Image 1 (cartoon, rainbow, N blue to C red):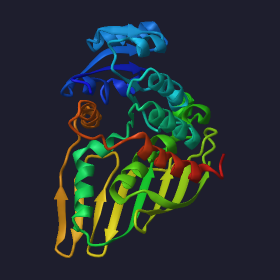
Image 2 (image 1 turned 180 degrees about the vertical axis):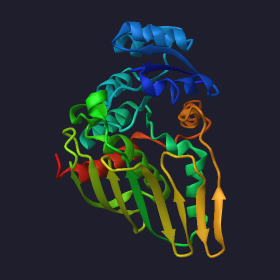
Image 3 (image 1 turned 120 degrees about the vertical axis):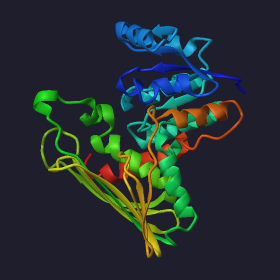
Image 4 (image 1 turned 180 degrees about the horizontal axis):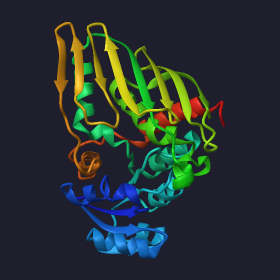
Length: 324
């Protein structure tokens, strides 16, 4: 059991600038003491800007640093398993960015290594730690909409401007495991797993309509969550507009909320519409980071583990099976 958790980051890129990195420094009983990038100059720059004492250009040196208690792997998904297994072998708890890996089989390998070594494995489905999604879960479980019947998930984005911006790694299947579906839909699928329970049945289809890159740019899904809650989803990344709307419909009302926005949660029932305005924190991963630190110091439980995250990877892999 740790008294305080000293973190090291492997891959201090954009996601660590605001979303996660400062959260390790601001969480109680937590500190960020080391960062690593293969480009040592960038690692040194990050350390200087964020007041991190140590920087490395070699992952093994960070993992083997005796002052690093736990490791956050913030690389693209293709490298998650490799670094997670190294950290686990060193006996250090590991926090992996989402999606957990590029394949469900890799997820299972990571889980087995974690269990065999007795080392915790967490995954960055940080919406499980956010108050707005905990409120949705509370309303569903408290019967605010009666018995849950079905759910819908819709996420549309306008096409990437690959001519000007180049091809981002998030749409290179060898690195990301797929396209933007893997990057963005994973959050929605995971939070529905959290709210409604694991998926027991999955069917769907993936395609590439705009032909801007190799990866899929549209996915449709038909799912069964928990105890028989039916759901449909569509994720389109070549639409004329952006849209982000989820609904959970019950026998006495419905809940409407987004995955990525901050507009109020809406509860609609026979009495009208009630709003629940809940904003996200600046460092959006900080609440989940705090839950990991609490667990590692013996005072709580983290809601996002390798086991829960692997379920989402399984669902996505099934939905992309026909495409790849």
